[in-house]
Length: 238
Image (cartoon, rainbow, N blue to C red; front, side, top):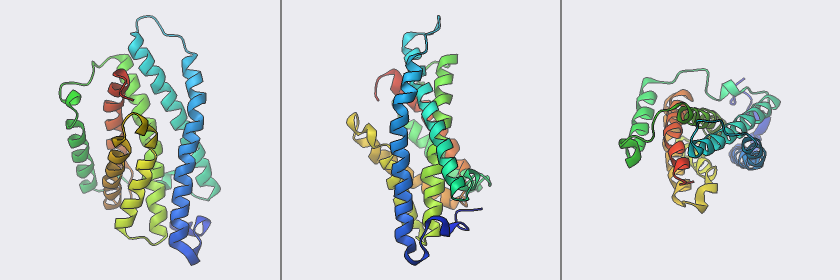
């Protein structure tokens, strides 16, 4: 069952737009709160692991953060999937059933390339490809992209579509939610929520133009985080 066919599950048809916005922000803020709560639990688990011999201490600390990241993102994704099932919708209905359009794939990869090229460290080679750096990249990139794309692209935009919003407001509201999801970074860099909000708008437009397929933006999101985040962790940016 799609979000549109399950519209009555969380949208009051007499106040469709208001109910749609409330549903999006309630789920979005709920996911942010859930991740904050899971962070302490996952950090305790990761910090209890002993460093194997042969792994540099810096990369071991990065791998611990990556492990903690992966645990809480995957647990949050499971909770979100259970919420959808409770509402008679499946996670796969968020945009996993279709591959997307050629134009959406091209747009996603172009945005990805431009974004990565804007980082000087990417142009010069972010870090040496070793087992522990590859692990960190995969542990951060894949779970984060799966969770955030499902919530802030799939659920949010489909709910706004069901509520009757036009494309401009679908893009703006989903981008706003994506920016809010990264507000915790404001303590170290206030531009992060702004940048992610703008990027969220771009990815939301691509999602819509890709006929509501998550795959183009999900792949771009995963590659971006896999390349960028381990470097930020190594150098203590965040």
